[in-house]
Amino acid sequence: MLTRSLKSGRRSLKIAATIAALLAAFLATTASVAPAQTSTDSDRTAGWRSDIAYYLDQMRRQHYVYRSKPLPSAMVIAAQQLSANVPRYSDERMLAELEHVASFAGDGHTYMLPFGAKRVVAHMLPLRLYQFSDGLYVIDALSDSTQKWIGARVLKIGNKNAEDVINAERPALSVDNRFGYLWVGPPLLSFAGYLEKFAGVAPGASIPLTMGTRAGQVVNVNVPMVVAPPMRGIPKLPPSKVSGAQTPPLYLKNVAQNFWLTPLGGDSVLYVQFNQVQDAPDETLAAFAGRLGATLSAKRPRTLIIDVRHNNGGNLGLLTPLVTTLHNYESSNPDARVYVLMGRNTFSAAQVFLGRMNRETNARFAGEPSSSRPNFVGEESMVQLPWSGAIGSISDRYHETIPGDTREWIAPSIRYNPSARDYFANRDPLLEMVLVDARRPR
Image 1: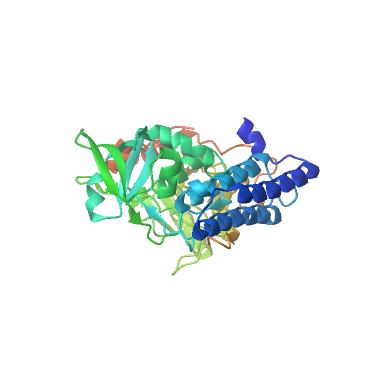
Image 2: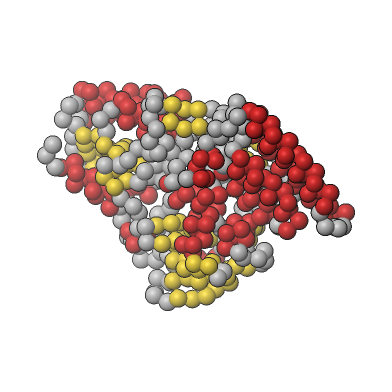
């Protein structure tokens, strides 16, 4: 409760001025009393401290909430502590710590990245981690030597239980709601700075992990770190890559395509996968909405399923033709059933889609809650720190899709929390549950 109240930013301008003055004095003091260092160390410390001060200044200038209200006290205190600890922390940990500072803004579009800084070479485990209902698992690998760990459960990182590390990481992440932790936490935990901060693992060439293999063995391994490859956002969930898995289920077959549709069980069910709020190279979203409308008019399916489990946003200005098509179909077919499948990866402009479907249709929601609220502060406005070159975003817009709505998320009426057992077997129990529900009498 204390952390949440500190994130609210409800402080007077007088207090804000006092905090700013204290911070300036603190930075000057810590610079003057720092231990004797070489010129290079001194330059580094001064550089990071100037970046911290710059970041807070940009937060005051740009953030939707804090350009008119004082910064949260907890953010300022975290910045003070970080400034004092610059000589103790590695550069990669500094990036993780800056994300912790950003997290006090209280939204998922205000963040600092663990890679891309011009003065920092980012390293990471060549493993992609995912938090299922039954534990933290490896779902993909970036190197040939670590392919064998796909499907293994991560039991310990260094000397700490994996669940304890995940729980320690959560309060220091930029999210809109608690389901955002499930989405962004495991991928970030692969980065060296996060391992240092939350698992207590010293910077080095490899990271000790304790794994539970698919064969039922518990093994201790040292996984070599690699230079982080170029990346853009959190990758979408791939089909299971363990040997012997079944054919990928429908929801994992074509996640790279922005939108597509297919009938299920003849013409009685139409499945639409909507993976990005962006035009595709060969078709605009508006054109797709028109094609979908023509298909609905011709086939008149009894059940329409829109799957946005992989949709992390895009351009919300493109949504209206699609929402109008869905609304018109429901209005002209009172016996039809419309379902929206969502999950932790549903975010940003895709959250606006959820809000509009909730407000403008009678669709039933299924899956996990999304990673955002019906109304949220959320627009990426990029920022780069001048000394380190660290990059991030400061959110500068507010989206109110459902006026007055204060829910943390839109709760699914059909709930499913993905399990490792189902995922690695390439099963989709959620779609099965929805199809069963669609066959029930009203």
